[in-house]
Length: 252
Image (cartoon, rainbow, N blue to C red; front, side, top):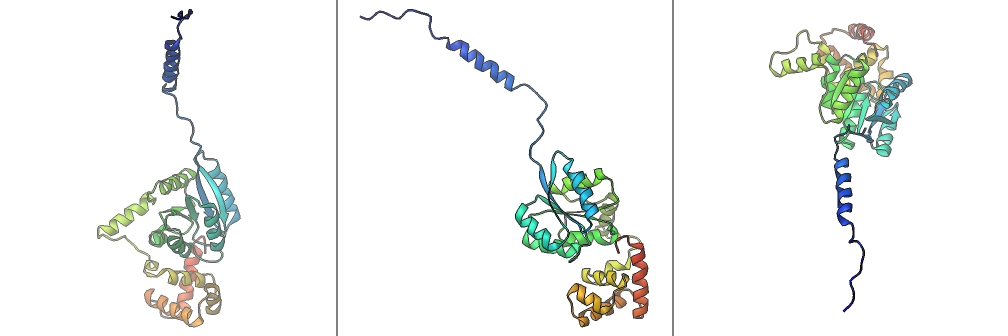
């Protein structure tokens, strides 16, 4: 009936060959491209110079970035709500509260947010307290930048970071051996230790009550507990002991 059309048939095999060539090229083994995702970190410290140093160090990393800074607990909670960080770095000494109290509140209000403590306070006294308060790690400010960055990444990965010395100490305690030469301050509660610190800074009962938003009677009760737990006979001995300790503590 109708005549067949002349001309070459469609060059479909050639197209398949081209597609195959592209597929092979796409499957070549090449170095992975740098990840564009950067974990967001909140820095909470009441010293501007320290914050600036941390911000510069963290922002220089390809996988980390600082999403906010805070000097107070109030500012920290506002930033957490606004920026939704992946982790927070918290100092123990803040303008309006302690890092321990802040971590306890974070654990209640933002339980999924991992917190790393970065402090000059002795880890032998504070690391275990920080973990009980909800921290996922504790690192001293005297550590190298590499160590601090490693601690941040471990906490982001869902792990717990402690120095090798502190890890050995806690394992010894778990094994029943106890830690040698334990400080008597280990026996104090978090609030008692806070009152002790303020005594060491030279604050009187009224000033401590005002700063901690406690009654004078409550502060006097804490002072009595301190004397009992530290085996001190008088308020004068308590003040002397607290001042001596404060002189050895770089953040007091």
